[in-house]
Length: 56
Length: 241
Image (cartoon, rainbow over all chains, first blue to last red; front, side):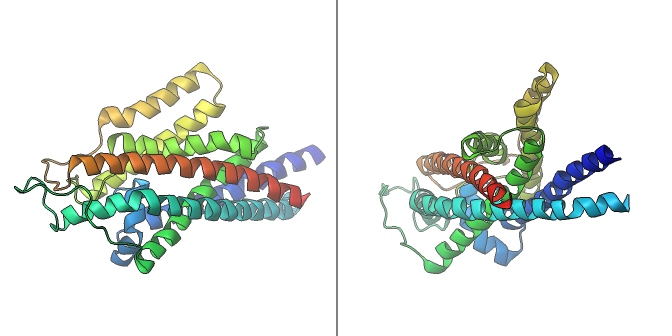
């Protein structure tokens, strides 16, 4: 029982926070790099070009 | 089962705040340095290209055009926004990188500023070099295919390159290396969406310099990001124990 509890918690301890952080990170990247709303596009324009995102 | 969840919860919360904190520090630090490098080396080339994009300068228009025109200087709003958005973008990258570092550490890999250098290289290849190999960093004003098509190709190429880099680093079998190489090659064999004709008014010298500068600053940015992610991941872990 003890072993089982430990294994489960170690896997969960790493996996769920990592998954959440990856989703959060990809969300931020999509927002700064890809979303074409005109205010966002204007603000992020130079960064998108310099960082290699397709811009126009 | 309820018991397991309760036991795991504080540890999960600690792990999550460790990921978040190290990623925020690493992303902000790498982002601000990258923004300065971009303003210094990439922005002047971009502004130069914009003179041709807007028609203020015309290439092959008859009279020779100076290669050293007067460029606009520092623009507080425009360049300030660029700094903020570079920091945001690199913080987004940092969330992904630190999350993967935590998984790798769980598999027994040592994470430090030093090993972070390799993580940074892998990140550069994944997010910058792999898509840019066929969809070269563009100056404003170049001819290009439909934006959505390019964004889809970009996203697919980043995803396949990311999986490939993970397999190269941690796969450990011949089959995993073969899959990684295939994943790296396929997007470029399929080909990126390109323009149907060339209409760009920007001189090729400016376009080439821009691509070189974008890749150079990108490589510096990612190695910094990798080192910072490794460093802050270690430092935040040491603080927890």
